[in-house]
Image (cartoon, rainbow, N blue to C red; front, side, top):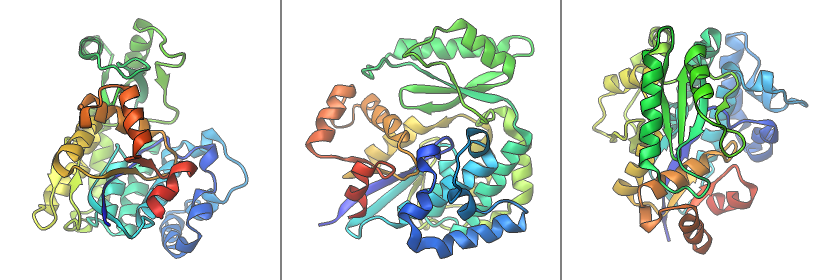
Length: 344
C-alpha cells in the first residue's frame, strides 16, 4: 500500500555536533554523488564535503559558517530524500529558507550537481558579506497555544524599531510558533532590550547567520543572479511549495520566473514557512510529513504550523502529541527513533 508524503527540507542551523559524520553513517552508498560535490568545492578552492563530514572534531565557529554548513546540509538532505522507502509517493516538496534550494533538487527542477552549485554559491556569498544577523523569538507558549494578539503586537514592535534612525529590523521567517527576525545590530539590540527572556533562552541570536530574507540581502541576491544562470533551472518533476505558499507545478512552471523568485524574492523578502506547510496540508492532504535530515529541529516548526492551521483538529501541543502517538504522521529522518519509518 502506497503512503503519500510531503518532503520538507531543512535550512541553516541543522548540521551541529551530533550530525558530524552524517553522510558517512547513513549514506556510504552515495559517495559517488558526494564526490561530484567535492569536485565542485575543489574547483573553488574549498574544503570538500566528505572531508568536512569525516572530520574528527566539530567547532561551532567553523561549521556554522554559510560556506561550510550549507553544502553539508544540502548533501545530507538530498541523500535522505533519495533514500525514502519504495512505498512512499512524494506528492510535493517544500523547505525552510535555504531548504528551498534543496527542495528544487529533490523535486527535479535542479539536477543534484546544479542544486549543489546554487547552495554552495549562495552560502559562500552570504558568509563573505555577512550582512546583519538573525534572532528567534516565540509568540506561542510552551503548550503552543495560538496567540494572535501577541504575534501582532510583536510584529508591530518590529515595524516601530525599523522606523528608528539607523535601525533595520524585519520578519525574516514565519516559522510555526516562532518569529525569526533579521536586521542590523542596532535593530536586533533594540528588540532584545525591549522584550523579556522567555522559555529560558529567547530571544536567541543565531551564530553566523546574516539578515536572510530581508532587503539587506539585495547585494547578495544580485551577485547570485550574476553567478547562477537561469539555464540551470528546469521543469520540476514534483510540485514545489515556495516561501509564499505558491505551488510550482510540473509541466506548467515558467523556469525564468522560478529563477527570478529563487534568487530574488526568496532572498530579500519574508519567508513564510508556516504558510508553505499549511498549503501542503490543505492542497495535498498527505499521509506523512517527512523532514529530511540533518538534525531534527525543524520538526517542531512543522508541528506548530499544522496546529496553527487546525490540521486534523489539532490546536496545541497536547492534541498534536495525541495524534502523533496514535499513528505517527510527522517523521524527522534526523531522529534515529523515526528514521526507519521513512526508509523501511
